[in-house]
Every structure is written in C-alpha cells, then in structure tokens.
Length: 362
Length: 243
Image (cartoon, rainbow over all chains, first blue to last red; front, side, top):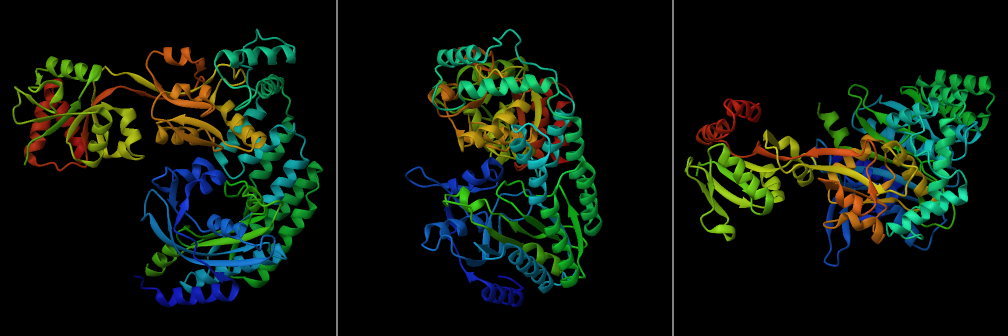
C-alpha cells in the first residue's frame, strides 16, 4: 500500500519504545466528538447511523477514542503512555477523506514539562525520518494567555467569552472591537429598570410562548445579560485592557525575541506572568540546546480552538511549503471534560503521515 | 441517449408556478398522466424529457449530474451537499418560491438583537449549563457556515425535518434556523430574527448541472430552451457551465 514501509516500520518501532501501541475501533459513537468539540469538528465527520438510531462516525482522530478507552478502564489516574499509527477519516476540502496518522498520547504523566519535550522531539524525529530535517516549529502557550486573562482588569463575565475565542483570530478580533468601541445599546428601552420586575416580565413572555421555565435559557440569565449589555454600552471595559490584550495577541515571530516582548509587556502593565513566562524560557533554552537546527517561532495567539488545551502547544511545519506536519500540546482539561472526577494532565501529538510521505516524494 | 433531461417540481404551488413560468416562455409542459404520472412533455421542444420530482430531489440529482436542468431553490442546493453549489450553475431566477433562511430565537431573549449577541450567549450557555446551545434545523450546512462566519463555535445542531418552529417550545432546542416566507409562523411561535440573522434569500431557479454529461446535442437543446426565457441566456449559461 505504501512506498514508505521502512519509515513506517521504524516509526512504529519508536512508538513502541515510548508507549503501548493501541488501535481503538474505527467506528466510534459520534457524540464523543460532538460533545467535546461541537459543530466545528462535526462538519468534518464521516457519519453513519445504526439501526437503533445511534449516530456513529469513522474516527476523525485517535486522541478522543484513546482517552475514552483509558477512562473506561481501571487505571484512571495512573500514568499511561499510548501510541498509534493508522487511518483516520475526515471530510476535507482537498485530499482523500481517509489518511494515516501516527502519534502519542501520554495520560497522567508524572512530569508534564518533560513529557511535552519527549513528545515534541518524537515529532521532530518522525519528520526527519522522511527527510524533513529542519521543519519550522510554531509554538504557543495557552497557560500564558490564561494567566494574563485571569489577572487583567476585566468584568468576570467577559473572561470565558474571551477565552472561548482564543485561537480564532477573526472571532477574537471582532470581540475586542466590541469591547474597545462600546456599541450603541440596541435593546428595547421601555423595559422595567427593576431586575425582579424585568425577570417577571421575561418569564411571562416565556410562558406565553410555551417555553419551559426549567430548561434552556432562564429568565434570570437573560436579564443578567441584558443588564450587562446596558453596562457595556456605558463603557464598562477599560480601553487599557483591550490595548493590552491586542498587544499581547500580536506578539509573534522568532521565539527568543518574543519571550522578551511578553516579559516587557508584563512589566509595563504590571501583570505578573513570571511563572508561565519562566516555563516558556526554559522550553526555548532546552530547544536551542537539543534541536539547534529548528527555527522556533512563538505566537502568543496560537492555539487549537479547543478549550481543553492548557499548556504549551506546537505545530511542526514543512520548511518549504509551510504545511503542518505534526501538531500537539498539553491538554489537561480533556479527561475531566470527558467525565474523570478531577483534572488529569495529558500531553500528545499527531503526525500527518500522508503529508510527510508526499513531501518525501517531491 | 442524448436528450436534455429537465426536472420540475412534482406538486403544489411550486409545480403550478413552474408550469406557468414555462408556459409564459412558450414552453407549455404537459403532464399526460395527471398528478400520478412522473413524466411530462413540452410540445414546443419534443426532444426534451421532462420529469416531475420533489424540489429537494431535484437539488440532489443536479449535484450528482443525473439530471441536466431543473427547477429548485438555492437553499435546497446548499442543503443537499456542503459544496453542492459549486457543481451547478444558477441559470435564471424565476421570481417565485421566495423564502428566506433565517436564524430565529425566542422573543423573550431581550438581550439578543444581533448575531454577535448570540456568540456571547452560546459561550455563556456552555459555561453555565455544561451543555451546548442547541439549534434545530434542516439546514445543517447553511447553519454551520453562517455560525462559523460569525465566530460561533459553542453550539450543536439538532436535525429537524418538520415543525422546526416548535423546537424551542418543545424543549428540543434553544433556537432554530428555518425558512420563512411571510414571517407569520415565526410570529405565531413568538420567535424573532436577529438584525443580521438572514442567512440566505432563496427563490426558485432554473439550475443546470455541471456534473451532467454534456453532449453537443444536449448543449444545443439547453441553449434553445434557455433562450426561450431570455435571448442570450443560453450562451451565457453554457459559458459558465464549461468554464
């Protein structure tokens, strides 16, 4: 099937030395993916229905099936290293819908920082197997942004909304525009100014429309957001906050310089980012020592748009074409989202074998 | 077999309007077997085969190239396949079958007037309820594209194939994306459309398939037929079809 059986054997061999090679079912319950990633991933799924109406999909990646398998087993909370190599299925704009990926998922690692390095170096070595010896490394730090967001002067209600748009430049840009230039209040102005009265009015309207007072958006919730919108129109968010967020998100380029820019910004605005910044510096120093051939770019706004990522995230791109060859990161929120009783840290990466093989043929 | 295959809606208002439009263009469609027959003829162009199909089936078959030309709505083309619109050429809007695909939500959501509000609501809803905001619709592709263009990711689609407007009251979804022509159904269900909640203005169109097998003979039949509607239309459509 492949002209690259030697490389694949070598890759499987390396995965085997680092982790337990697993192959979760190709057919997976679609809800697993919809629940974690919503419609963004939904439109990529290859779906099919069972006779009882259950919707299944062909696995679009290995991460969620492996995590689900781990949670269903009896070793939850124990450190486990999994690896994989096999086909995944996604609808995409070009290229076949079935393509091969290889990768690692280290669940509950003892030392996440060290594990991240291990995973990243595995991806670098995998690329080298296919002749891509000097890929570019695109690095992001979700923890750095989350720390800034937690400490910056901003009404609490906006923090999760800003977080949800992290990694999506256009949506983030629009949100910051709204915060910067308060929009005209466009709600009805003839509504009661008393909260209890307004809540009652909304509840009555819900009742008239036959909406349940117990499911969906509640009257209190609607009124709270209505008030908050009124407040925003009176400029509740400081322009300084928006400026800082914008400046932070625009920091991108050769990694060592960017780390200093982040440090400079933190100092200038008096927000303590020391801990995540130190982690970033350590990562960069380590990379310089262990992979000097790699050009590292740091991008403060870079993240997969999935809110279970928590730490450093990376992409390896082909030196010439810029195509993504591997991507990965730390995702400490995933297992908890999937039902684990507490936070369990995790680090992983996926390698696009089809792209590496195509690149090697060129 | 090299005769042009034309599909027209098989029932109701759409069928009548289509036949009226064709008659006005001098192409009266006969349905010899009446409403139970699915084959028809055009006296003025006996070489053309006419089939009566449902409008959504016409959309599907135009995309897959099983029919050459058909009358259907743009909304249905979008819904039949995500990139279906790229497989067809909209040759002529027919000025009937107007319908808007819109986002509609409970009037009691006094805090929502525009799509940007919905982006906040979707985000808040997930954090507050630990569930995705649910959107009931049969327009899955259009919804995904429109929501994504507005930066809304925190929602799930609940597929609905009938009485979508009742989904908020039945608790099946928080809001809907549906088709409306007069707005009266929305009004009756106490739903409102955000200021920028219009996804698509749709109407019945003469649509040609790019994926159909176009022999020289069929091409000339297509040109002749379209020219009946407006001189020059045939060449224009042929040009887009083959470029």
